Amino acid sequence: MKRLRGFVMLEVVAVLVVLAGLTLAAVPIGQSVIRRHQETKFIETMREQWELLGVKAYATHKIGTMSVNDEARQVTFSLFNGSKRILPFPPSLKYDDKIPTKTTREPSGKLKGNRSVNFLSQDGYYWHITLQFEWGRFLFQKVPKH
Image 1 (cartoon, rainbow, N blue to C red):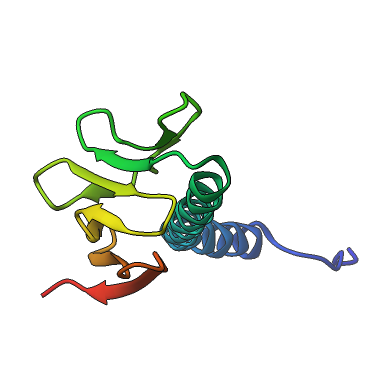
Image 2 (cartoon, rainbow, N blue to C red):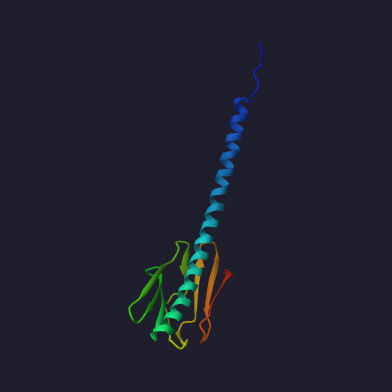
């Protein structure tokens, strides 16, 4: 009787076990990458909205406000003429300053209120956001948790 060439059942099972192991290992890594992408996109959108708020405040001669509400898990950008943009937090971020933040930006560029905001990531680091004096530049950095 001639032996057929090919894989035996044991080899097929071994390959399936290896593939299942690689798949299970890739899921947590993939979730971490997705969380980091969502957080970065949120911070970048927050920076864009802050800069847009400054331009609108200057153009309309109205005071703009950025407020962070931990209970509603959102950042709100609004002008006193009624226009508003609400930006929800990603699920992996937690507002870490314990008190609601409200920063106003006058048409001249002058800032009143909090000038820094901290978000704690589920992955164990902080996003530290600083609003610089007068010209209102939005700086952010990723800082390891102490």
